[in-house]
Length: 161
Image 1 (tube, rainbow, N blue to C red):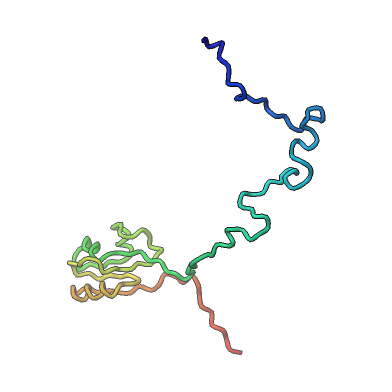
Image 2: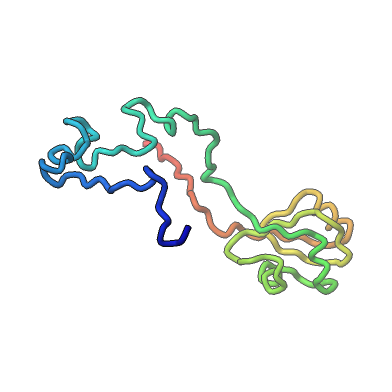
């Protein structure tokens, strides 16, 4: 057998069906879509998740949980990371940013009690954990609380008439 003698298997090649090309073609008028109905019309295809008017799956499934809009996010700093500062120095959020311990000053800073502090420091931050505060007192270090940066939601008091 030679290359010019090769032929495809019988039935494996089909002629393309040209629909909507007039009555004489045999596929004219309705273009093989049948008569009337949603699928016979242009743009009649529905999305795969359409369930014929019954309550769809994405509405039947319960939505669990919620998002707390009053949640406050803090940048956390471990006590052991503060050992990079010199003894008896003042540590402010600007200094933490300079050393790369926090990413931005626009977010409040919280000190965590992980590890041990070997130096005496004066730490200025927005929040501190109870364990971290105990470790600071044992080490004769001082913690000064900074005021909150800004409140997203202000509580409005109703005035009495």
